Length: 118
Image (cartoon, rainbow, N blue to C red; front, side, top):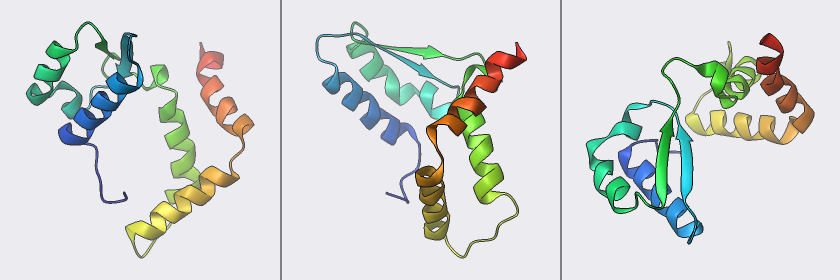
C-alpha cells in the first residue's frame, strides 16, 4: 500500500517471505545500510534462519555498487524534480506511469553507466 513504509516490521515480513519462497536453498540478500536492516529486533530471525538466510551489507556510501540508485536518480529527474503534486497518491500515480512508459533499454543504459565510469 502507499502508506506502508520501509521499517523493521516491513523488512521482517519481507525476510520471512524470502525464506518461505526459497525452501531448501540459502538466500544471500544484498542490502544497503538503512538503519532498519541492522535492527536488534531482526536478530532473532537472522539467528534462527542463519543456515538459510544471510544479509550481505554494501559498504557505506557506495551508490556505485547499487544500480537501483541510478534508477532512482533517473526517476527523480524525470518524475519528481521541480514538480508539485497535491497528494502522495498523485506522486505514486506519476511514478507508476513513468515505470510503464520507461523502456528496459533506458534502465539498462543508466545502470551500465556505472561500468563505463570504471
